[in-house]
Image (cartoon, rainbow, N blue to C red; front, side):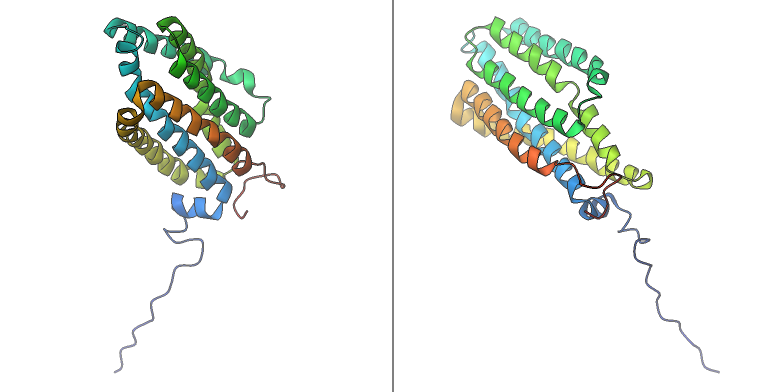
Length: 217
């Protein structure tokens, strides 16, 4: 008797594991991929500020550990206020709000970089925290609006990994940057690069011409 071995049947298109992965979904939705890149770069460019700030406080601003802690307290209070006010901006298109946050943080970081004393640096960080506070909430809200319900979990998981990696990379980049440009220069370069992200984000996050989740743009 003959034994017939059936040929291997390929998984239907759109039902394979790869097609349902977060990366595959993002490749099919370029605006989602570009949004992820904007968030990644924003968090990456934030890193040098954390590296440079203690050197700025204890160096040119002639502060101590207490002053450094007070500056981060200003940032934390501002971030809390910004997060609490997030719902007040629901009428603003999230794409524009996200870009405004990026530009606002860049401006506040520049103020910190050129601040003549601790008071100005603290005010810059407080306002920067208020602007920075709603960033992730707005980004995830925009992401959710661009995806079908069944595609959200794989993409959210991938996003979480990207955000987790961006910050340590920013700190790693901040070390050589601050060593080369100094504390003020490192923060200022970070602010300028973040500002350059604004026109890129405006173009990349342009609303789609058709309503509804974007999967084949």
